[in-house]
Image (cartoon, rainbow, N blue to C red; front, side, top):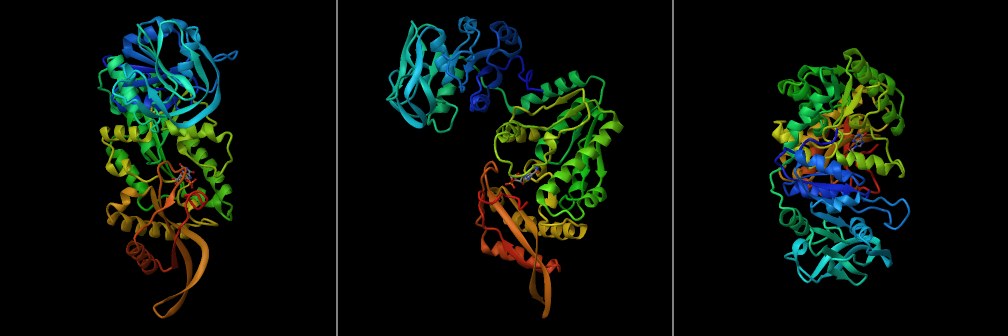
Length: 523
Ligand code: XMP
């Protein structure tokens, strides 16, 4: 489900027409940050369709996104030309800017150089969308084609050394073009430009917030599932938890939230998740499947094989429940970055097979898949989770891999090794959390049980036990990460407690590798 229908009738909306540019979604995101609802629509949307949406969405403006094509090539995506005659303000960005010029008989062609990155433009007329800007502005460009001449009735607002028509406007109508990207943070006053467009040009009023989508998402689920049943795989992470609570509001007992305890959860986690969601009125089934997972992992040491087996077994368990419960719809907590990542990964090297319950393939033919959070970013989901009353502990939870502690036990996974790791993990967590604000800087902090043994001395006796690694990283998106510079006295407390409280461990090491070259998890 898209978040179509999420805007209340009185809430002003900006539609972003998507020409396939990598920043298209960011435009909608930046607008929503200003408290104005924004939704992405396909670039070939017809003028009539926009008019039809208008009653429901109060469409106050249109933004044409960037895109990889050249406007003059055959088959290049275009807009329904009547869109430019509708009296709704239009702002074209990059490809959108070139397209407006091209469709209205200006000239667009290849530039002399490709421009990619930060550059300066001269603002010749600081009016309308450029109001309040200085004469020189730092902006982000990413293009080859440029507009060489303007259509009739248009005027230049800004230029750069490579791009004489870097910004334009129609002299009488609210139609604008920018060759640069105001939605990218590297454009110093990008937010001001977008604010000028949405508030001054389009006359929007701020009033939207992420939680405004809740009621509409609930209604949409009700309309789709009708009297049927739906199922969701609940991991206890923020995304599936939020989707589960929204779906539960819509379907009550006809939502079945399934939490599969594969035996690789952290201490107390299955009990915590079960209790929390029961308290919130979610119909939750906890499947205690530890034995079958341990059995399938017996003798397996290859990390990719482990991940594959856990993923497969997870789906089997989930399918058994779905079949038994006769659920017709699958609800997933997929968020927007999950979708970009899976797209991007198609052409990139596979580093690890992520087992992510949100993106679960399944053999069962569901009548439909509903993804109430599919257009949102993590922080927007956090805000929704807060207004749904999800506990702080779930909202602030550190990411945890689908295969759980199984990929933090190096080599063969056994119940006794998981038990050792669980105790070490609790100590790491407790000590970091005690340390206060350090925790807020960390993306993840956890223990890893290596398959190396080492000599130690405990109580005057020789001891021979495991080497346990502690990992703590700082990161923004987990694509890159740096090891955290944890103060030595905290590391000392962790190490002392682990070696004292866990007899099987004789040595504790701290992982001082960044990602890349390492990954965050050890396997
Ligand atoms: P890596 O180890 O690839 O991890 O640097 C990046 C982030 O992803 C988490 N991770 C997973 N998340 N399923 C998930 O949902 C998985 O299979 C999985 N493996 C790793 C990891 O904890 C880190 O935050």
